[in-house]
Length: 303
Image (tube, rainbow, N blue to C red; front, side, top):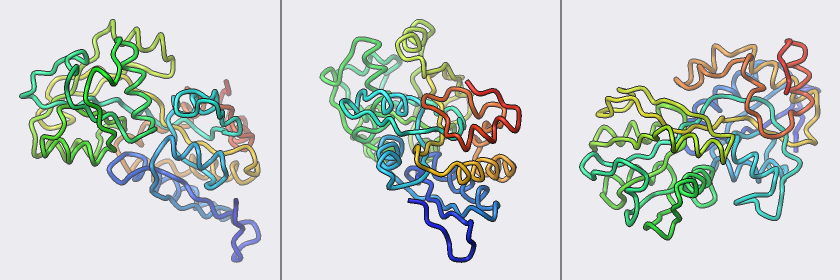
């Protein structure tokens, strides 16, 4: 529910659900909320959350007004697939595409694991239960003909992947986040890690089965000890809302966000990928009319 502040007849108080503090949503979400709040009609604040899947559910039930999500999770939500099976969230709407979230499959250098198929019989952290990361792990394993039965699966968030890795309680872990991911930056300071590289055949098969994936490269040197470029999948991070949010509120939020991109870009390396030109690319749910109005004014094509 949108709350109108007593200090202004037009100031809407909005909460923006992000993710955990070890991910990329949190710092960028705080910067987006601050940028949007430069419009006198908007008072936005960022909140931590359990990230994409939880955010989609909270927006759909109107517990929160705006949230970060993954393009794949939004597609699954709209279509009632995977963690949303049998309960499609048809009222979700998009505000903007933000930046690519990269799939990191982290392993220790000493493990000898060089390919996803090498994860058979290993202890693997696949993301928090029902999370976007966990959905990506399922999609990736399905593409190569593996299931969770082929390994010992642990459902862990980013911080837990790092801590379990440090304690040698897992052999590999999935982290889907903007580059660099804080949890892996921290892990690389104490452990000799590397990342699994996706060969062309695997990437082509993954994208053919899941068009919301795109090939991405993590430059060598991003993480300590990972000196070579790593080819891996990515999905777009997007901002979502619901269809009952007032058009004027979302228009003002979107306008102020993009009018203050410099502040957002300064919040995190991945935030520099947020541009007005790319704001409508890779969306997997309908645009909210308020966001669409702003893009039309700015001459941005709407698919």
